[in-house]
Amino acid sequence: MTNEKKYRIGIDLGGTNIKVGIVDQQHKIIANHSVKTLVERNYTEIIKDMADAVYHVLEQCNISLSECSALGIGSPGCIDFQNGVVVFAGNLHWEHVPILQELKKYIDLPMGLSNDANCAALGEVVGGAAKEYQNAIMITLGTGVGGGIVMNKKIFEGGHPGGTELGHTTIVSGGEYCTCGRHGCFEAYSSATALIRDTKRAAQNHTESLLNTLCHGNLDEINGITPFDAAKQGDATAKEVVENYIKYLGEGIVNMVNIFRPDVVLLSGGVCNQGAYLTDPLNEYIKKYCFAGERAFIPPVIRATLGNDAGIIGAASIVEV
Ligand SMILES: [Zn+2]
Image 1: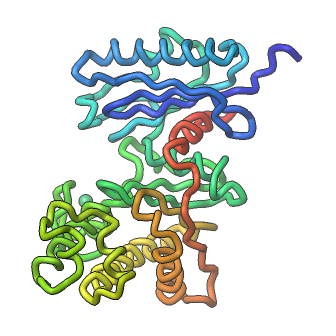
Image 2 (image 1 turned 45 degrees about the vertical axis):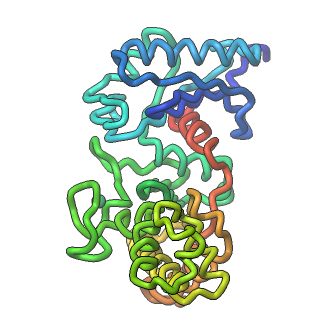
């Protein structure tokens, strides 16, 4: 068959770049193209550029639109997946943007829209670290804590606009202030931002700590790697920071397991480069504290593998065809 629809199009919309990829049936990106989002423009211009980028990448790999079965977009912010509307996205300065309706003016394909963290989770389940699994929770540890829930290889959106926000579930009532306006959110303890905050505090309170040597006495040089480096060299203060961080992360993951009991929990983001140093104690923690302990099923906590490609690969799989 010459016109078999064997490709899908995935778009990862961000505040800086729009990344478009053509994805094959093995969930591999075979061609991609990135253009600047330039958020100060009207959304109609941005979406026109998105369409142009799609045609550009199709031409680049000599594939026609008629060979594609569907297109999906992962967007930051609050999404109305049923109507294809970005309800609110702070970094795009968007409110109530009917993105799919606008894109359909240029591209005639079945289309789907979801939150970018959901798309990354779906990407890992269809073509990454969790491809052997049906049900997964993915937690991205970055500036914030992003989360996506995949059930039966589909994004779990809830039933209404807004979707799920795993990072904004409380783990310490009345705890650290969170950017969402609440206190004590998972994100306020387990993001890279929170880890850096806690490391700086520890360095200030323990002037003898190696943390101060590693940052050359300048707390602004502390990053998400600093506490791990110092802990691995035996620094007691840094060890305490890392142990606390793992405990908070463990608390958040135990909550997710107790609600969803997924097949696997995936972690992504820069902090995960610590590998087994992070995941070994986390796996021990959840074995101990998930309800019923090892008498019940305990999902493994593993690292995601697709990195920045996960968003495009997942977006491409939103629409079931
Ligand atoms: Zn929050």
